[in-house]
Length: 633
Image (cartoon, rainbow, N blue to C red):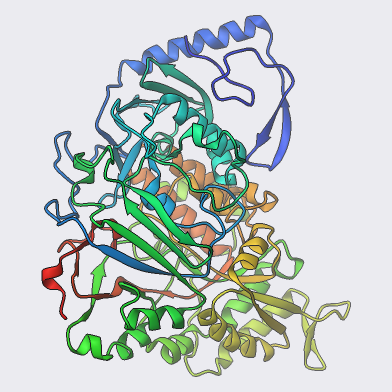
């Protein structure tokens, strides 16, 4: 019998009265009361009948895709973007900017070590990065979902082991999910708010019922981290710290220097080394991370070989800085890795919780004042492509007028959308590229006047005489130089803007509390957007601390488009919903976009190698290897 869970525990089958439950959409609590006995019986009967109907269309599978069928067959030998014969051994050193004070990447507080997620902790399923969104069994040997995706079942591999030697159990899986929901980042709470119940099925199985059909949730749950419950019995999960995390992955923590250095060592007893899903991956015996305060220090470390790879994001630097001796004599190499990713969004982010920026006309005036063409030519030698929308550069970005299914989805909100949203949408205005940008500044002045702001004695003021003053919070010196030019441009409009450059921990703390007027921020967006979109710009993030809705977007159309893409069953419907979301986000003018790279640019030292064919998502660190025969001395 399937348990109906309405209380705090995902697996509690007992009746629950007067239970408080967190609401992800409003960030508030609401009371949920036990129904009358007869109603509960009818609900349970309906559930059982519905489950029986959907069960008939389900069968265990090796993998699942967001729409359609996964690309790889049940007997696949390896992922398509790896070299299954890649040599094993050697070590690699990555450079990171900033520092760290925690090994727990799943909680809100602290700055964690990214490598824990990549090397130490595994999930039930593993993602293929050569498909928009498909997952294949890792800790789980199979996944089972019905046609309507109202539930999902996993069968755990009996041979799965944590690095401690203890078996991975269903209890570990359920405990991990519950602790993430209760003590983890808000994203997990929002995710599990869609789960109705969890039921064990034998020693190695579990089945998850959803509160409603959800196209993405079966895959997302399969990617949730699985932690060893026993290793957390004597410590608090919700607090950061430098106690290691025990996982089932191919590496364990070897050593560290707080805030400066972390070393992961290959686990010789790794249980999953021979799985097809791992062929050609996790090739190094040792992986080291070194932390640097800024990009310049990291670059200098790469030039002398202290760092093995350097990811280049500055086209001017790419064109001019790779003439140092090691490159000239072949000891260091440079190359471009193609990708088919969406542009994502990167730029100046307005915090619309601040009354200064709650008027779209003000935000549009700021966008007009920003001459990106001048900045691209001056700083990047014209080597970046301007971001046009959140999903530009991909089939998910909106184009022209909304038509067909996209128009249908937006029709209920047409009266509340900014003028022109359905007809053409909003694109960032093109600057003059001359450093003066006079035409755009004149248009910006008119918009500010319409919004109630006029220049008095050289200062932009509202009707009460209060000046337009705000601060740009920064963590990167590279962003600081762009902010300096923007501040000068805004001064021509009478706007008094200042900047504050802070260290990474303080920056993150202020982001968590939305304690800023404007920031520079980037959202990396996949080709299969899903539940994370609610975490990025859903209205529940206006008040809920720690989401990535930094702009404070509070638009029913955004929420509805996220809902639509989550339930889309066909590729056409999914694309239409995502394009509609892209259109609404862009028309809100929450961000003044920067530029992006249409390929991944890297420098690396000879001896390190990679597969010839890249995944559609571009660079993947887990498929590189060390070949001493190719190292130039």
